Image 1: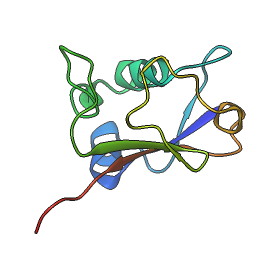
Image 2: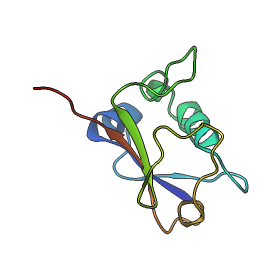
Image 3: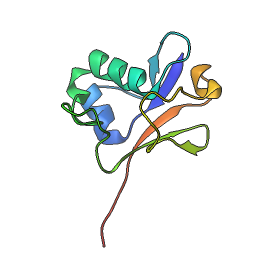
Length: 98
């Protein structure tokens, strides 16, 4: 079971009270995980990635197992510690400003 941590505003949209649990087949990728989240929680469509291009939205970051996976290809397999549920996959809203 993959544990997914969303920022507060996406938790509100998805009606999640905490971590989301996702079960995917072996060697799940970032894309498969996001596909599943958007399928199970349609209100998330377009918030994490562009609906047309599938590209991650600016100011949205992906972290897992102490790694920044934000700029990795979407077909990157999730780390084993995330696949096993030992560590969460974190979707984080980045902050910018001056």
